[in-house]
Figure 1 (cartoon, protein in one colour):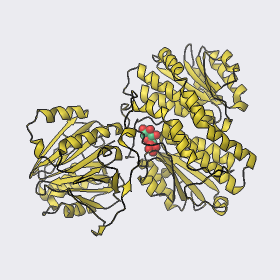
Figure 2 (tube, rainbow, N blue to C red):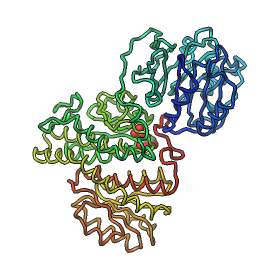
Figure 3 (cartoon, protein in one colour):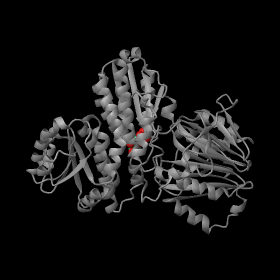
Figure 4 (tube, rainbow, N blue to C red):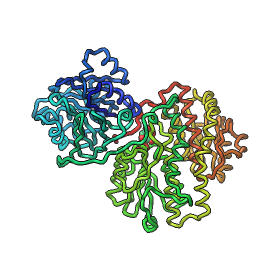
Length: 612
Ligand code: G6P
């Protein structure tokens, strides 16, 4: 997904912006570019492909970088117009006096473009929606870039964050946002802009979060924020406690495996910050009274991708512990079918980034219908968090790899906590059962550490499997939801065609695809469904499948049926998903590694999808 970095100060702006863009590579991109102001003359360089392509061009150039104290940069993930040098950002205005970078979509760009061509004779060079912003700014420019920006955004519809510079104002960067992230970083004798915190962590821990409709003006000593009425506003400083190192690889080959290993820590943070000595749960000040909970006739959980899979487990947990009916839906479907949501609905949005546009749009739809909005989000201050009535953060820390791992397991932990909290306040769960579950959750991080200690066995297994082109995941109950996540992990990073199905459903069609040596991962972690799973395993074995059984330690009966067994530590069935998913994450990782895939940046995928 697109990324933005801007810098103004006495340092080498080109170097700082390129470094910042590299920190955003994890978001996924297909081209990159930079615009610089050399004392009143703008220069733009941009290239399709990796940032190194751009760096090569800059290295060969004779730009006097020592005189460049202002620059804006961009990584693009194509939406309007193919990935190419021309479509890459920054975009110039026709007179080359204004340059912009843009994340998001200008929905009415065709109307604006037509008007600019007809009334002002503007010639466009790219296929992008973004170029209209540069042209519009230049048409409105009368010596103040912020004034031009206010006029331009009053004509634009869509979601965007925009940074602009003008040749005639070599001491200023102007930026704005609507439904796409933008923050200003506070430096010492310098200031920054970015779409995402890791871009700036090396330079600053203090930020201003820019709100929808605001215009922010940076010079090297000051950051001024103006609201939609053009009035100056005072914003609290947002302090980030994590350091740059936690956003980097820490010696692991990939962010994904580093993040897999960070799960015990993330889970401890997510759990222990919320538990009292008496096992009571504190929901970060969320005020959900017995009256509120009794008033809910339904919970709706909405999310995308991995977060949706966490929602499926959330349904099991809330229905079992709090006895409230739960519907789970993918965000891109939810709002287009007039869902039954009203003021008696608790709507839970789950999102790692908090910026997924479909999830945000679903949240707004539910809000319009009167639902109470709770979100489970990893990125503090993100759009989903800000637009929710209540936010319950996953404390996973920054997740860089596109394939989500630690965000998923901490989302599960949050779901358990919310479900147990509601169950207890409502009086739907017995104390002894509640306390047993809390004790089990407390043990999860140490059990996970133990499980991670068996990583090399899964790595060896991956070496024997990596050439396969097809894998099936089967399971019952919560295991069927964990299978969906295991399957997603495998396909997104290794490009192996994988398919997850409820084990009981297999015989209604999919079993036709099982033949000699077909790989089937059979999740069998639920004690009361264990025997039924053994029968399902026999069904696929009878057709020659290579079965990888996943079971709890002690359930050795599975070894007779499986070609290979992976054990997870003993635990209560209810919490097994947090453990069961981890071998699947590791398996996907090592299979992708054996296949030589670009694990942290899989093709065609993006970390945060801010388009519909
Ligand atoms: C993208 C990512 C997935 C993620 C999904 C939802 O598709 O590649 O890993 O699960 O978006 O993202 P969110 O930030 O809302 O959890």
